[in-house]
Length: 129
Image 1 (spheres, rainbow, N blue to C red):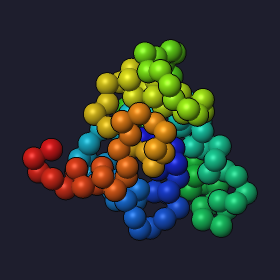
Image 2 (cartoon, rainbow, N blue to C red):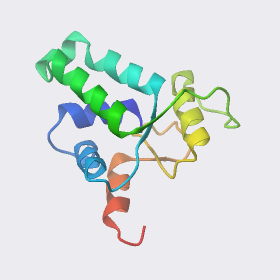
Image 3 (cartoon, helix red, strand yellow):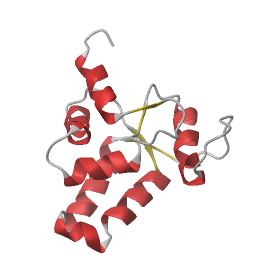
């Protein structure tokens, strides 16, 4: 799960990212995160701009919830994935590959084989998935 999807799910009461969080909490799928991803998420949500949406204690509770309920892996090193344009996204591709996830949910079109949040919600709604 791309941290941007998790940010959107935290600050918006509507939309695919929020629905993904609800479905995950309902046990419809397993979420895999890394320590680096959780750190990035917390760092972003603790920026001053987000105080309009979440207070610090809510951010910390949210990150703790993810840490407690998701599968947390140490950040893997290296990858057989080549050509990812944004070096800041390499760790997500490495994590997805190391965890053999079925879907890397991201709105970032530069990630190989990423599934958009809306497409992922549709996959979850399809009982034949």
